Length: 186
Image (cartoon, rainbow, N blue to C red):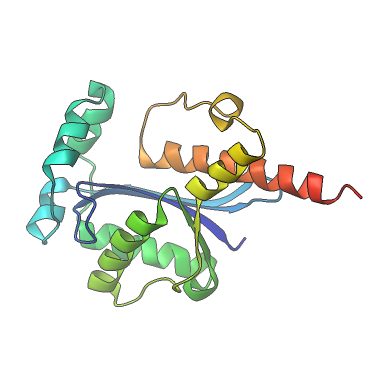
């Protein structure tokens, strides 16, 4: 599988954001099949002490979330940022060449920049520019086709990066298969 859905949790919208979680799941958008998975919670303290930035907007957003979701920032099993990023890089390398990976994110202009920043900082490597694909764009395309993705695949789970990645894969795969089906009608 060469498609990789990424979801991160970050405490800022800048490339220097303190990253508090990374989830990555290989998948096949033609079938919705899931492949190898990766998920790490990251210590906010460690991310910040290593230069990760935090914005007031992110703090306000987290304060408005249910306690079950806020508590994820305080989990004791959180890893140090460098270890989590290096583990993520190893995960991708063991399963696919990073330069050939089709990288999917909810918002590539933000998430890919943040991910690229931490990858460069801790591994000196990153993903190929131009291989980023957007879940948001797929949803907009679905709207133009008359599909209501909120109704078709509702957001009904405890928010964390892993669950969000699974949700995004369902959305992308549904739209991909829908487009494939209407394109094959002759």
